[in-house]
Image 1 (cartoon, protein in one colour):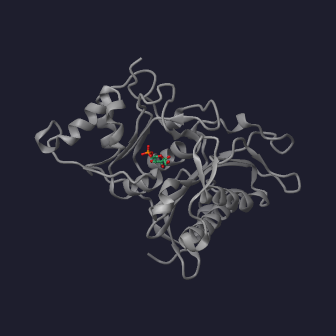
Image 2 (cartoon, rainbow, N blue to C red; image 1 turned 135 degrees about the vertical axis):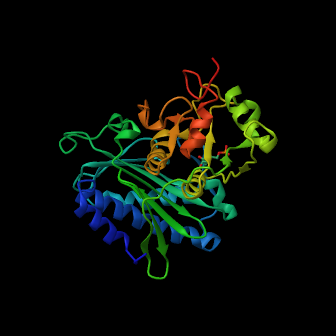
Image 3 (spheres, protein in one colour; image 1 turned 90 degrees about the horizontal axis):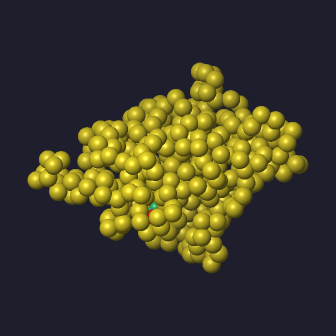
Length: 343
Ligand code: P6P
């Protein structure tokens, strides 16, 4: 593949159609540059003093790692001044962040998880950054954006992407016209196009789920997994493999490239909670990417991208991956209120 930089790719995409406005192109370039800075910071590890926790909790009630807060600040500072955003929101911030009046406001909203899987940081395992782009409301230039302006279904995303900080640093993007992958060339500090129109392979028999929650799942989920654990002697007639990295974005990146299915279903540990993962900045952006790569993304009952959020930090049950495997999951049935929850 000829060596095409992210900037050249974005300019070519902008010429080809209306999917990429000048402001959206700038937004993507700014976020990609911030992900590059995060990658370099992660790579320093203990040498950069970025390991460990701050002893504070985020709005999720989770202990904040130093890198959670640092990465959030990198993305915030990178995006405030460019004039492409009207506001932004983050897993690490309780409420939305308005663009300061000293900067011009743009036509987009950015919502992100600065470091997904942050418990992996201190043990040198893959983590990632996930982001979702929505259109700002009409009149955002004349009034302050409000939290409810972010509460759009995932089908309204105009772009989504993630970076995975692993053996390589990868960036995966979609603007609704296919999925494209880039690899960070650390020698020159630029993103290089390495994958065009990624399509999830079918027929891969790998599932990603946290098996320690088995006793808390509803019967449909238990049966779906038990049938796969039974292997070739069981009803599926073939052996399966399991992976669980503790970072959704790393699991999804694997599924995007070699197939399989990712599940974080509702479980009875916290019955009032629809799921563990967050809708706006995990399930929606990754769900759009999975669908654009030919896969399927549901909460167990309905398409994730159809869910209208009630709050910025809504949680949701997640089943996403290769279409054939998600359809196999759906054949086990489901209930009205989500992932087969038995009321
Ligand atoms: P558990 C990371 O905290 C995360 O939000 C996802 O990235 C990951 O897939 C999941 O939670 C891991 O959850 O319960 O296995 O620790």
